[in-house]
Image (tube, rainbow, N blue to C red; front, side):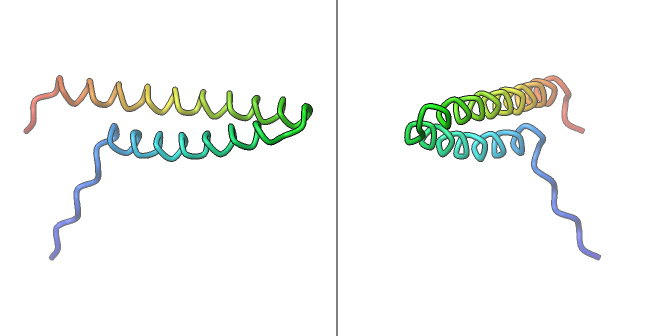
Length: 74
């Protein structure tokens, strides 16, 4: 019988996801720089939505890291 692998902590998973979101944000911002005026507004709105997702993901990571630092290991 094999032992299941431990899952990464929630904060580690959230930080990895935030990295992916930031990579996507970089592409959105670059697209905004290359867009015409109407497209630029849309891309800036997309970037703001992406930033909100980054913020929420980092908030999850912070809460998880704080919770793990308070709970003593078994």
